Image (cartoon, rainbow, N blue to C red; front, side, top):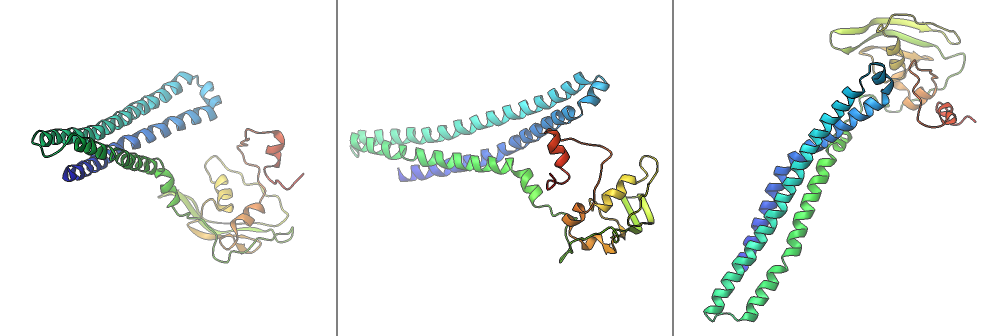
Amino acid sequence: FAGLSLACVGIYALFTLLITQWRTKFRVYMNQAENEAGNKAVDSLINYETVKYFNNELYEAERYNSSLLKYESASLKTTTSLALLNFGQNAIFSGAIAIAMVLAAKEIMQGNLTVGDLVMINGLLFQLSVPLGFLGSVYREVRQALIDMQTMFTLMTRNPTIKNAPNAKTLNLSVDNATIEFDNICFKYTEGKPVFSGLSCSIPAGKKIAIVGGSGTGKSTLIRLLFRFFEPDSGRILIGGNDIKDLDIDSLRKAIAIVPQDSVLFHDTIKYNLHYGDFSKS
């Protein structure tokens, strides 16, 4: 009976491990489908005016519905595989109980055991049900949680390419030393399509400069480089004679005021949106 108990525990654990690993892919597919559906819903709601301009409400609804169908299919497979896991676990344990009862009954018929011994064996085996169920549920929940947090773990392991240099300086500007210089800047978003090739220009402190050009000529890119959203492939950007790579990013961005061409408003009060640029102002 001890061997039967050990075999039951081993088979139960092995079955739980194998089935849980097998059903992992269904959980991954379900999470991907859920994220896809959420992204489509948010994207269409944020750009609702564009959707209405082109009368594409039905198209967006169908796109969203197709993602929901993928989620439904993956969710059904996840639930079905969980039911299979639970059924298999119960079948293994019930099979072990049945075998133990048959063996005990034979021993009673041969006079080697009493009815009390059968009751004791049955009770001892049933005591395994709680720890075995706990083992299966804990492993399943931990595995499922790790799958759900997979995207978060991926993001946490990525190192930012733009960060403060060691001993970065705080940018202190005045009206007299706020000159901005672009020194031989080269930059491209994609290989083989340069936006700037050796750009050099200077914006004196206190002066108003207009940068005029067609769409896609790099006007917004200049601002992104100035804010260090991207790094130039070569060259330097100087503010007050300081290379912005040597400056603290927070102090750099706080020193620059900007009115973006696409004014995005938060879903809050007018006061909140007005204060967003500087919460210290009254």
